[in-house]
Image (tube, rainbow, N blue to C red):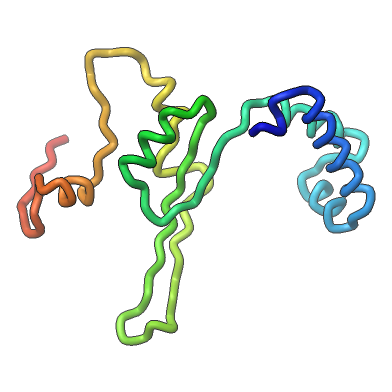
Length: 145
């Protein structure tokens, strides 16, 4: 985030990427996969670096403190919940649930763009209600639509 704060540092980043591009066949292949022609690389990098960075973080638990911290940042924050599953009786069998790229659990972009209204919005999960003692395991819940 600091590196793209000034035009001088953005220029240095562009120069470094161009140098890496010129020295690495793997990097050239990535640009080709992204359908970015060699003549357009500097323009594309400039467009990317001119935008405000987005903080993206895969994480195993999203606490209220983390949500509050994310809301204090000037940059947009997107958090994805990654879950780990271990098979009972066979701990060597491990699976991870990787969320979809475009569906983060927390996206401060949406919260900043909500219109001012007299309706309060809260992002509360059942786990949060259990932790707060407002629900107990076995309680009946009724959800009306």
